[in-house]
Image (tube, rainbow, N blue to C red; front, side, top):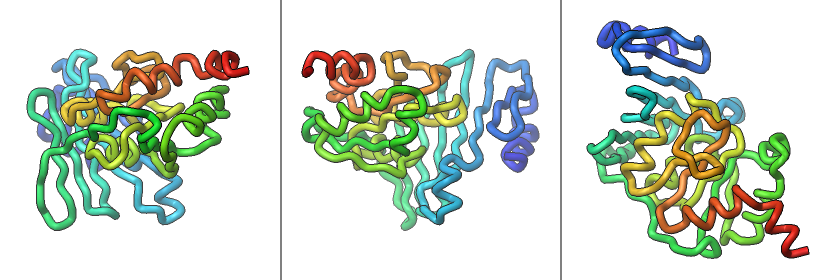
Length: 221
C-alpha cells in the first residue's frame, strides 16, 4: 500500500486516498483512490493463490475505474465506466471480460469466502437457501470469486462481509462486464458492509434470497 500511495502522490497529488492499512488521506480533486494491497489475506497465508491487489477509483462517490491483479495466478482484470472490462492472463493475451449467460439459479455456480461469515452477521439462512437452490457452491472466494463472475467462470458471488476497499475496484469491472455489483438489498453501494456480484439474468433470483431468506424458510415450514 505504501508503494501504491507513493506512485499516486507522484502522478495525482490532488487526489484523495483510502486504504485498508493506512486509512484516509484527504484530497481536493473529487477523485479518491481506494486500495486493498492484499485482499484474501488468509488465502495468502495458507498458500492459496486466490489473493489479489485491488485498486479502485471513485469520483464524487461513484466508482469509475478499477483493477485487480492476482500475482500468483498471473491474471489481471480491469474496467472503467464506458471503457469496457478486460482480462489479461499469464500468456499475455487480453480479452474482453464478460459475465455468463446462465439464467436459472438451479444451474448457477455460486462463490463465497467462508461459511462462518454468514453466521457472523446472523444470516446463515442465506447460505442455507443458496445450498438448496444453486447448482454448485464453491468457497475460498474473496476478491477472486467476484472476478470469476466478471469473467464468466462463475455466475454469482455472495459476500456477507465487505469493506469499501474490498468492493471499489470490483464495481466498474463487474458492471462493464455486463453484470451487477450491489449490496444485499440491491443498492449499488460499496458502503453497506456486504456485496453481490451477479450476471444480469440471476440478479432478481439472488436478491430474493439475500433480502428474504428467513421468510423463505418460514414459508417452507
